[in-house]
Image 1 (spheres, rainbow, N blue to C red):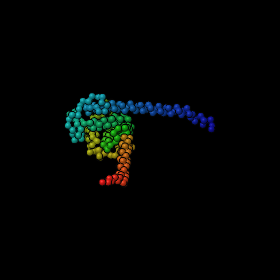
Image 2: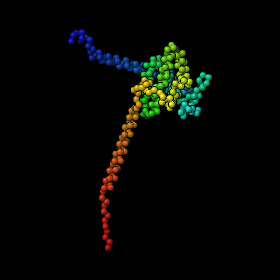
Image 3: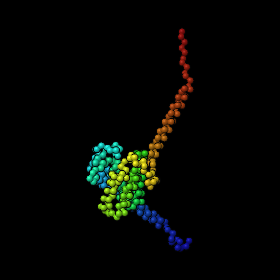
Image 4: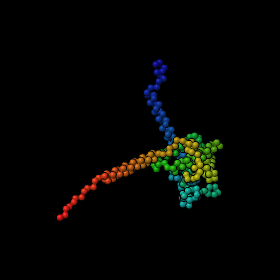
Length: 262
């Protein structure tokens, strides 16, 4: 080995130092990403309290309305209330607020980070939500996820439009909010309930850019294992009971003692 090659070869201490720097950099990036997600959540909570009348995301902003009015067709049995919208009013229910959350949050991220990063950020949120769902992933959850992915896409397009028009600050915020309300109330691009018929006509998760999201989580696996164990135990009990019955039928009947009569 030449002297130059020996000098260029990294020492063990240098490798350890590089690994430490790498982990520190990843930790800093993770903290920054977490703080940014918190800013998204904060702004979404404030916006839904202001426009939709209720903060269902953070539960810290004023909730101006209660679900005390009768359901409508689009709410699928959920109670509603009214909120002013321009010169008229709009009907609000829980799942409609959820649709606004996804659309507005995606619009903010797309406006600030671009479409690619905004998409990956909200896909990661969906992945975490379904991975740690304590009730397991059901068919209703999969319909809700397709709806969320569609609403995320609508929000990203609105955020990109504000970015393309060079809007900033309050102008960009008002543009995004007004476009989302229009997409929700008039264009019906924002899906306001997982049981809406339009969910069945949505593209697949793969076509929506999310081919690797799980359809089952750890809770489903545990439930499946418990079901199999209970089934095996039931089969074993039935088999044992059957064997006992066979043995009892095969045993000779004890003879009764004959007493002589005088």
